[in-house]
Image (cartoon, rainbow, N blue to C red):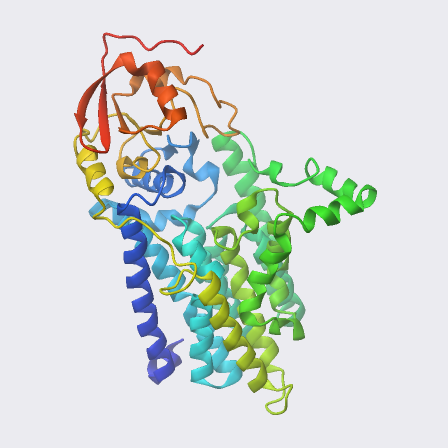
Length: 486
């Protein structure tokens, strides 16, 4: 590592400049989207409340979802953000750190491409190609998720494994395993690749450590915090693992039909096209992502097999490294040589970025309210009226802006639970004790029909406290009891 720091490689210096610009631009963009009410209680709000609670040495029970933050997912990597909340708490911590760690993931891509293809210019291209991959930028623009750390740790682990830098490899694998309980889906295949192609002992230790970490995360940590080892078994079709395996043999046509439904093949095309499918020439490295891609298209959860959501970023590094690996084995000349392959990857990267990545002037760049939008300005006025220690139920767009308190709910929870609890078993019920503690409501002046029905049911127990053109703050009248649910 010291060698490339000393080398003053102009390609690396250029990439560092690009990463700084990338971090500033996308950190500012995502924070502006947040201040323009473009984020929600799910997902940025729940992480903001959870990490804030940790920074105050309290149990991170996130009231917007009704679960312990570290029981929902074992994202212990979030502890790295806690010190920032001691000094300057704010949503900027989430959004800027997300942009930074994803941006830094381009450095190991560059290093491997430079070492393998012996060209700083080509290495610079691959570093940029990684950053503009639709799944990478999709994860960055989708609220906040700790999965963004995998955009750094997985590239470091791949570079270190391919280059036999075992100290870096161990740190990257350990970091990745702290991100989420299901990271074994990429770390186990990586370990098996290392065992087969680099070092058998290190590879098997990697795979074993990943499996053991997942078992502990699910059956010790998550079970102790939320009562079950996983909340997501419902995402496996045909009734769960045994039902799916049975269907493979007894209903193969249904299984084939399932895998070709709802755009799943198109998702795979979008994931692979930016690299012009070049990794298929020698798929040994790219196959590290195969299990992640399979589970994404297997899932019944729509978001997992759509490229703009955070579930896909973990699969991108192996596709990029696999492409570099495959091209490095091509002859340097001829129509089947490296130059033709690189031209194809460059063209595919450019086309896919323009079509599917949220880049400026691209077709998928998001439309959003800026922070100075009148509705957002009015929302901040309403939020400023709420005491810091008050228990609040708010519109889902405002809940993230009220996160730094012990109890913040996404209305109509807790008066009628919605998306709340470990298995959503409380859906539609009154959380009586929590509802009694609510002191303020913050709701839009023009309510949706569903929200209007929910509010009408409890309206007599609240008085108007503050209002502007877009929002109304309601304060609880303790003399009027809440009516029971019908």
